[in-house]
Image (cartoon, rainbow, N blue to C red):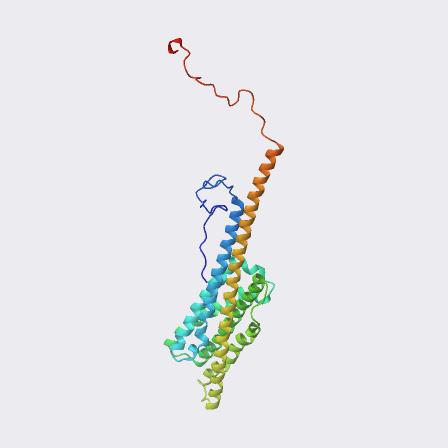
Length: 314
């Protein structure tokens, strides 16, 4: 989402850049500078931009989980590389979530149990991703016993489940943010998000279990057909869930950006009111306590005061 550049310290009256100004009035128009309001506005805008950027990064991390739901992990040989890519994606998502958490943005939504537990589940996902990627690299270069291969497959099932759970937490955060900042809930289609996001890993389980059984016995054709068909349905649900989460996170970023603009406009309006009130107060004070009249001789100019009184000059 494009963001508009802002003047780092504009005058509320004429827009003059006040960064190098040390006084209390604008050198361009003479308007009073309200540094306190501008400082608070700058802090609010910077914090909002950090949240928008972090949401954008996590949205990209959600998009990259399509590596799993496009069926890449089920392709022989290429699937090994896909699991490594997913591990890198988990690291990217962990960094984005850390930025959201450090900004304090999550604190306003932790009444929801999924968002409250989100950082913990994200750390578990990252741990499984690192271990799974290393295990995958070793298994791709060496023949491993069936027991270890089964352990790797079960680890991948748990890994996909945690990816889906953390994607759902991101969707819940986006849903809550849109509701909070726009005042209305997103499109009713988002009510199907739990079905799509949790249905995908569940329907993919038979395919992964089939790979374990195939190492021990021959799989009948009809069983293989059913498990592959279930995997297709799982991929369809997974793609749909990614689209829904991407959309709601994008709406949340837009809502936060619009809220930031409204706060900036309110801050500027409040600053103008304070400037007007200050001018009105000064005028009223002048009427109640007028300046005393000048004393006799004050301000008088004595002509030719420095001229010599020598008669020779007359």
